[in-house]
Every structure is written in C-alpha cells, then in structure tokens.
Image 1 (tube, rainbow, N blue to C red):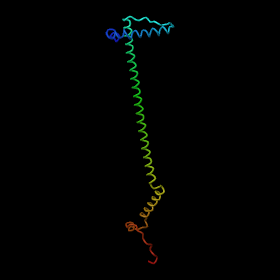
Image 2 (tube, one colour; image 1 turned 30 degrees about the vertical axis):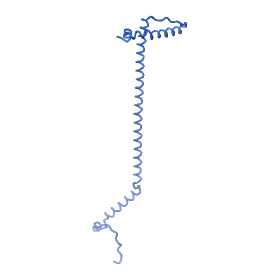
Image 3 (tube, rainbow, N blue to C red; image 1 turned 180 degrees about the vertical axis):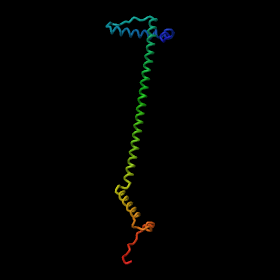
Image 4 (tube, helix red, strand yellow; image 1 turned 120 degrees about the horizontal axis):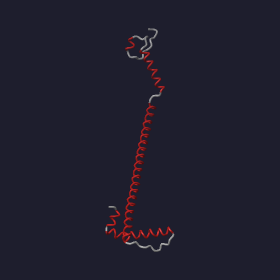
Length: 163
C-alpha cells in the first residue's frame, strides 16, 4: 500500500488535505498556468472534496519524496565535507611529521658537523702518522743492540770523546 493510498484512506488526513492543502495547491497551480498562457485568472473554480483529497494526497507524496531526497543530498554533502576535513587533517599530520623529521635531521647534521670540527685536522693526522713511523724506525733499527730495545727509551747523554 503506497503513501498516497494510505493518505486517501486516513480520515484526519482526508479532512486536512481536502480543506486546506489540495484547494490551495489547485488555486496556485491554476493561476500560474493561466498567467503563463496569458489569460486573466481572477477567479479559479474550487475543486470538489474527492478531487481535492486526491490532489492533496499527491502533493503530500511528492513533498515526502522531495524532503527525503533533499535530506539525502544534505547528508551526502555533510559526509563529503567530513571526508574532506579528514583528508586535510591527515595531510596536515603527514606534513607536520615530515617537518619534524627534517628538523630532527637538521639537528643531527649540526651535531655531526660539530663533531667533525672537534676532530683533529688532517694535518695533525699526517703529523701523527710521521711520528709513528719514526718510532717504528727507532724500534726496528738494526744498529741498536737487543738490550736497548728491551729497555724503555729514555734520554741518554752523549758519550764524550775522553772516555
């Protein structure tokens, strides 16, 4: 059973539609049609109760469909807006995360640059390498005897020619 049939059979709905909505809709519709066609629409013939009830039922059914369709449109609009806000929020969170990561990497780079500056310069490393080679040469020098190699190297006085 459809909405129109239900409205036609319901007593209070019949009275309300027959007395108010149907005739008003008929009057507006007829005046509009007459003006569009170029006629003078001063007096519009009223509808009988049965036709007014049927017209009112159709009007109520169409209004219900219109309200439901409009509600669906509004709900879809709200859903789309919520989805758009969610996507924008996700983008903003991802952007903030990337910005935080870049800031972290900048700090790590600054720390590494500070460490590199604190490390001895290359010329100091070359000097240390030369000193190590001198020490190895002294330790491995065949002119020295075995006792000199076992004893720790300490500054010794030069022998004088008189001795």
